[in-house]
Image (cartoon, rainbow, N blue to C red):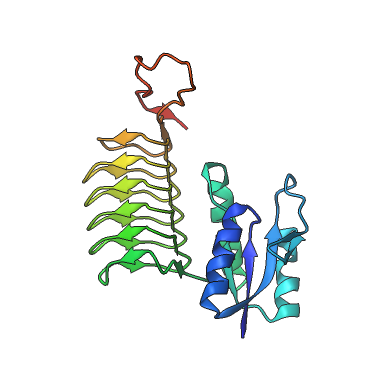
Length: 228
């Protein structure tokens, strides 16, 4: 059986490993971790190796030719890109994972390293470039262009004909209206509604959290676009 290594040891890694084990096509070697704040030595019964610089050595010892990214979240955006590019430079092939309960149109295109989780819907003629993560319950309507290293949060909606630029992050429950173009390295906060184009590197604030006892008559939406 082929062997595979994960890069990153966040909770997302456990989700991907479960998909890989369910498919039964790979034996998981373990995870490589660069985050000093993560001190675990195993995850899901698999070893966690410290330092991505050890990757060539681990590859040679385990005859590994494939990898997956185990990072997800707004704080991991650049690290995901760096690890993906580093692994590819080491001649590893990125695994594409699609949950059996995701719905993907036969005319949609998913490039290498894509990760499509349970309940996600990818509609007709949409294109996902490399290393795109589509989280639980997210919906991509027809003719969308989702560029490399984008992350779509759980339950978000991307309207028909929208473009999401490379490295951008769309937060949980956000709504991108049809035809909107979002630039590169943009952060769209949870629950935000994006009704117009967004320039590179901007932050679109999301819905503020309302705690019990707070005045709910005031708007819970932060308006305006900020620089990242």
